[in-house]
Length: 122
Image 1 (tube, rainbow, N blue to C red):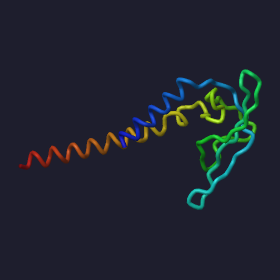
Image 2: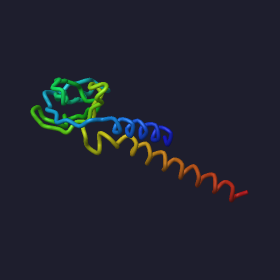
Image 3: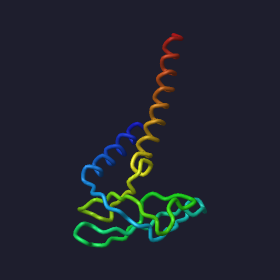
Image 4: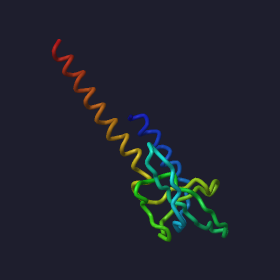
């Protein structure tokens, strides 16, 4: 879990180092079934400074839909690949590294305590 935390943290930092910000409008929600339940991914429309319009599906979804059609959201995008986007908020950027870091830290703590307790019994 700690390794996954470090990998997702590195990916997020690499993305942020090259990302540009643009305002985006939610133009719909794309649904996909996960475990027989729909998950809704916002469809985002934004323009680059050059004036090119892009429409992309966010890689982060939810149920119920987190954003209504017509909502304005701050978007980060990779200028070399404008299809690579993330909505600029704490959860979309840091949830995975934080989640795996907390779980990995807890497992390391429990494992370390179990090893210490075992060595103290000898």
